[in-house]
Length: 445
Image (cartoon, rainbow, N blue to C red; front, side):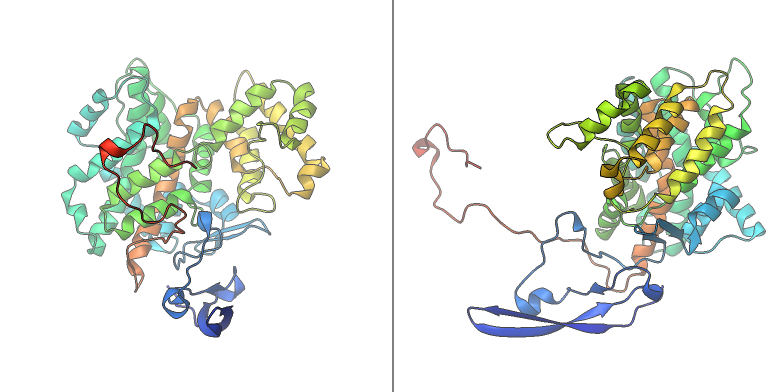
């Protein structure tokens, strides 16, 4: 990783003891790609102050060479490659290799990497028995958190995270096994027998086969559906320092094993504000119902007193069109064209998009459709249940999490994450014995 050179910024302030100033280093990004950051690691020692940044929206927590996003221009790069090029010209294993290893693989390297994934995509027979312990109506993400965390009990060699070769082996294991675990999760919920991986199938086709094949009859994967799912995997492979990725890095900072770190990422991804957004988009379209009700719901979205939210529009990072959304829109049309009975959801989604983009309220706020707006429709058209949507996201994002996890070990000053807080509670007070307390002693907000 290229270490940025430093300039400095001068900070001055006045307090009851007079005027003060100090200098702090400034770290520039690669060729102006993103904002410069002020290195505040010595701020407390030099000034007695800490910074307050809820959500860490103005704080750089790491140096990273994996993913770059320019939200204003709608740019997403992985290791310098545009997401549109990767989605159109690469397989998911190629992108996973790029994220984890740092460069696109040569043909021999890709063949070796693919063979490694095939070698490790089976799961231990005893691990399969874990699924019997969950209720049939358990949410798939709850199962994923538990089973992925339990992998550390099967691979104790992963505990030596200081060994680069063992870290790489752990990454291979996780990328390979997550689709298998996800498919077993689905089979458990519908009461069908487990279907094991097929080495002759591609990464996405193999996942669809494990999801939908049964012992009753042969299952032939639709190539358009496999391509669509592969695109979804690529578009969700990494997205810089989002909530789940930051969670993985924070867990890693305590030197937890990789399976625990990825389980933590899955738990963070579970939230509807993060990985569950595409499922929320479908629920929104269900609620709207028909195109004639679009004006009513756009008005509700603009009414701050109304709890209705226009899901799938706008993004925390992108202030322009999400570059993944336009790719997903084309994939959506391709998949729906293969279905004998087309769903009206695409027509409704297109009309909602057109209406929102003609509304000055949404245009002025740059609330453009994001990737979740169409990915939920695609997954539904592939026959994947809604409660599995976030699981698909986790299968894809695992490669990015692992790249970020592995990169964290290259940091020269890696230390355990320990954010500060601004304490606003009561000051120290005298302890009151139980017998002397009144009936109501809880502190009032």
